[in-house]
Length: 212
Image (cartoon, rainbow, N blue to C red):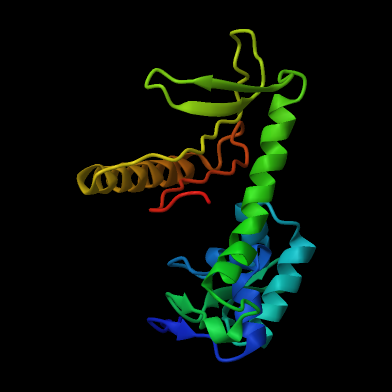
């Protein structure tokens, strides 16, 4: 089985477009493992319909992002095995539709933010009655959606806030967020095939700055 390149830099706008679309990323990621995989295995791993997996693989192969590297015989049929052409992909900003970094970030992350909002709204529906403004134990005013009468519905959690933090605390915060990300990834890898595992959206956000 041929070895892949250490990295691949997109050369065309279509390569860039495919690499930045979440549904293609899911399929591409499944081909970036140690062993080549079939379309059926990708569908099972990602939960993507087989027809959509075949479509994504065809487009990715047409644009040189994945390759058929072997075949597996099954029931007299030859099953194609796919593998990514590189261990890492890079997309130059000039090949994207983004006019600047902020615009590109909005295009990349808007689907996840919208998905979180939709999922959180489903969880809160029937529980939340109003927006509640109250101070926390440190005297900071915050706005929360929902009057739960002491019962907070499980299934979604999020917090957005603005704080003044020292360099040492910012460094510790970033360290803890990275550690939490690693823990979630480890759990997801272990539990992905469990019968009660469900798709979840997670966002760990931190940056220096404030609201206007």
